[in-house]
Length: 373
Image (cartoon, rainbow, N blue to C red; front, side, top):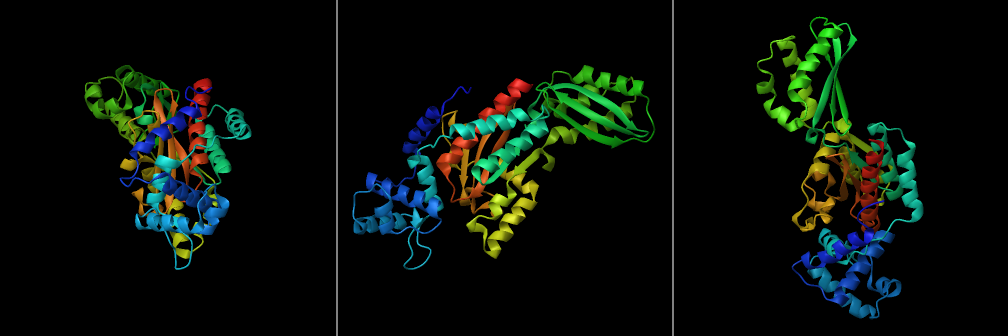
């Protein structure tokens, strides 16, 4: 179904080995760090040297492991929450793991089938498809699933329709060539006949058809300034009300699934953590900024394929409310325009599995839109 296999994704992460921290860890140090992170993700408890020795394929003594752990802590890869406790990974540790140590864990056949079946069962309505995608991401990841609608402003204008819905109220319908449609209703000062609305729409479509919405936004005044037919003032009203549809995302463009998943995570049990995460979940504007933020430099790669997967860990996030979380996102496509989907959860997440999930969902969603539109 998909052009790139998960073997290609695994290969990209192998290439990332040369792009990690300036501190070079030897094989023993890498093995101990990976063991601490993977066991901490599994148990949620700080990991001690005896636990590493017992539960990992490491043929060294607990005393030697303690020496390695002391070095890892000195270099900032792990930390000790309190005296006599084991160690837990820091943001720097997670970043090194993701860039250099992580082995991608493929989805099971059952999980892949669940994704495909969920997307195929919904109607051709784009909003329904995106809502299903977010809930499916949440269901499989046990984290917060988020899907941001395609970047409407990147599309090519196809047509505008003006539909009377009440005596002094009309619906503006803007369609782009990928099949996406956006609508807004506006109030007008006096009633206008259906024929006159059709004439005004024809003028606008004649002048703007085939342009990108960004071009229209930047040049619409020039392109329509000499209009003599219809109601020039009315055309100005239409364009000024249509601009918000072209200009940017709105909270309604964001689809969220699994809110209960994230608030029940152990990391969010104390009062301050609950305040931060609920503040984040309640403010969709902040969530839009988070999904559109640029990745940390350590997350970047020269490889075009890897750039479709973005991992932002803990304090790499620019928004204060989410600095205790990690974000894994990918791009999907509807024709020539793209959207963003991903999962959000505590930094203690199963990165190898969730990278596969986000990647597969992005490809499945693109494939679904290709078939349905």
